[in-house]
Image (cartoon, rainbow, N blue to C red; front, top):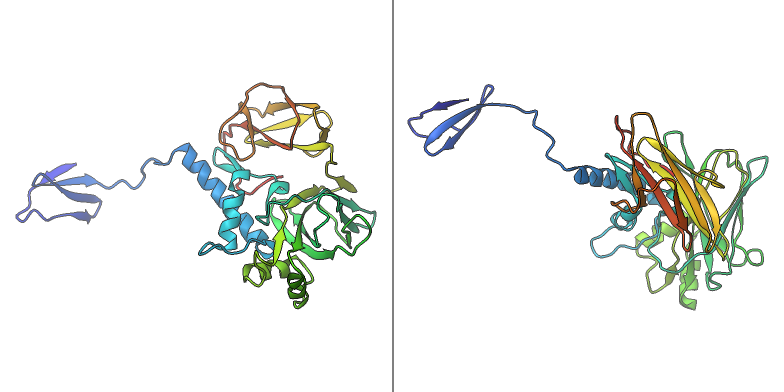
Length: 333
């Protein structure tokens, strides 16, 4: 670094490898160094990872998001705001349990999904109607999860209440591989709403999402339920989400380690209300277990390992480990 005196005191900017500035009437020359330290805190890095994953998911799920515009806020941005709390990040690596993503902003509950796949990979989906008898129709959406944990849209359909007694069923052929399945219900708020729906050629969830996003379906016409999700892993023939007296517990790992528990299959277990579960975290070589947190939370609620928890509601528990060499930024189930 050197000090230069100028006749007019206005020598500023970069010349060659030297940056010039004026201080107290003197021109200060400093060597240019573009390799500054990362000014972001770890919390900022993690927040950026969460937002990146939310944006990627919004792009993948855009065809079936049924969230109406809110002023200048697009369905995509509303989806991101709604689901950011479901995404957890550690050491700049973000992940989410796909089952918990919400494709609508409805507040009515949706009942149990069953997913059954036969030897020919025909997938039969059924949604019990007991939770809300006023649901008029159900939208089913099926995505395939690739080896890179990306979601590829496969199928969507609309099933009317006029289906088999007590269920809203649909069957789809050739559904092999690992599938992420979503469903949401909609109910007519008036006879005029039913007539309006009937005027459109609506056959699948993409059509409904398109009508919602273009305001052809408004809050005065229909009410949407919350989204229910489940995952059918490769090799599985049937998935049944918990019944009326059960809750679902999901366990995932964030960072360099793994989590497990007795009776868990692919990181999930249906548990009777009032029972407890015990889960154990195992760090990979060179890594350290940091604690347990609820999905979407930034703080650990326990560092006990193994951890025993009473189950009185659905739980999505993440075991957090440090990641010595970093990792990817796509979501995991």
